[in-house]
Image (cartoon, rainbow, N blue to C red; front, side):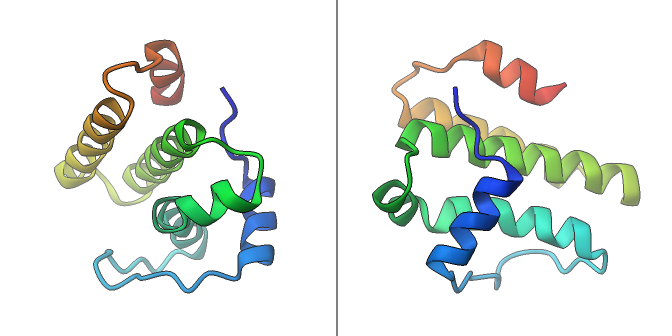
Length: 115
């Protein structure tokens, strides 16, 4: 499974120059946390463009979305403290991944992301 790395996403940002819709996200004062959230939003909002211009499949983009949100969530919780809404959002992403892949989820990848 190929999860989009930070370098991959930065390269895609440079190429696609996205205008992210950030109207429904929490405001974060920490720039590094904010950047992690933007990686997730980019993967979510520009999935079709990414697939059209880069060597990533839809499945890889879905796993990458989950990876970057969970990474953001873990960093956020370490800095701010527990937030049940973050866990709920991660669960909803996992549910979406399950539905989009017709139940064919690689649980080993999900387990590795969760660690």
